[in-house]
Image (cartoon, rainbow, N blue to C red; front, side, top):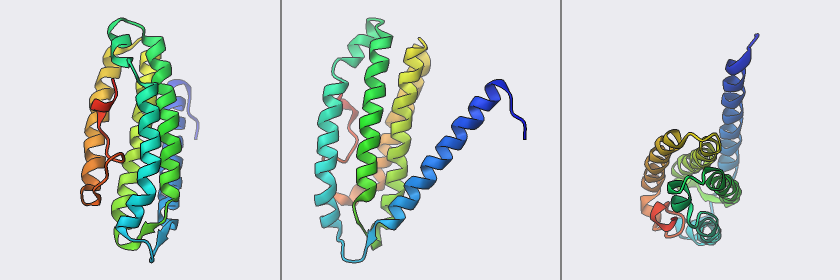
Length: 169
């Protein structure tokens, strides 16, 4: 198959996203443990999420103000760092043994967290390119995706593992 120009970039991006989703799904599936309980999972996941939440609070501190002031390159760098930190945390969460009964919910949740990381990175790319309105549209998708991720794990009684965008300003 021959792909040229912009189509090639879209094809490569889609292929990379598919590879990441497949790897994340395989990792989540492999991490099930019949001895793991929901409470045990939460106890192992919350410290990972807390560390990431605190890091992203620091990384994204003042980002809204920078965007309003037109400092898009600076804000873009912050989103890029936040995406990297979020991706690292998502990888750590995928390695936590999951209760067999909750594997489907947690796999869905981890997939939504992967999309969250991707959206953070895309917002950074759009800001770097000076496309404030496109970044804003992606921000709406980010909020929607975060709500979907939270809904996927409602019964887990997470604190830091729930996405709360109001923590970041």
